[in-house]
Image (cartoon, rainbow, N blue to C red; front, side):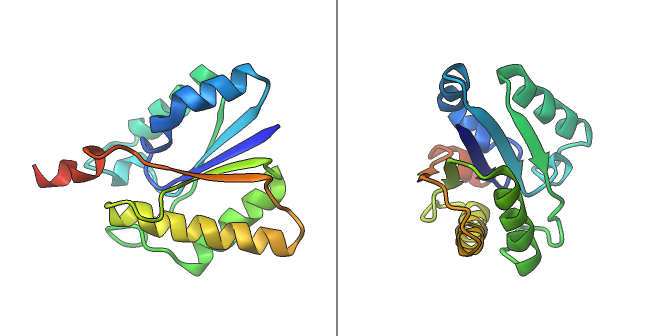
Amino acid sequence: MKVLVIAVHMDDAECITGTMSSLIDAGAEVTYLNLKHYMHHRGGSPEGDAQSMRGAELIGAKKIILDYNLYRHYKHNEQSFLECADIIREIKPDIIFIQHPKDNHIEHVECAKTAMEAIFAAAVDRVVANEIYSFETGPKQSMCYFE
C-alpha cells in the first residue's frame, strides 16, 4: 500500500505522524510532499529542511520538498498542481491525505486546492487513489501568528 501526504508547510504533515507510523508499521510506503521549504516558514533556516527530512526518515517515510515560494504566502498555481499531479502519477498512491479545504489558515486551503486539482489531473490518466482524506493541523497551529 502506498500513501501520499500533501501539505504546504514542513511541520503540517507531522501532525498526523501517529497515523503514518501505524500505516508504516502495517507495511505501507509513506511519502510526505511539502510545497514550501522550511526556511520560508516562520523565519526558519535552511537547516530546517534537513531536520524535516530526518524526521520523516525516523518513522520510515520519504519526503519530497517542492520550492513554491514565489510569493510571501503560498498561492495555488498551475505549476504547483501540475508538479503534484506528476508526483501522484509517479507514486500511484492507494491513499492520499490532504490538508482540510476549510482550514482557517489560508495557505492550508490553497494547498488543499492544489492537491484536489492534482488528484483530478492524475485521475484523468487513470491514476486514482482508493481513499482520500483531509486532516487538520490543529486549532492553535494556524492561529499562532495572531498571539
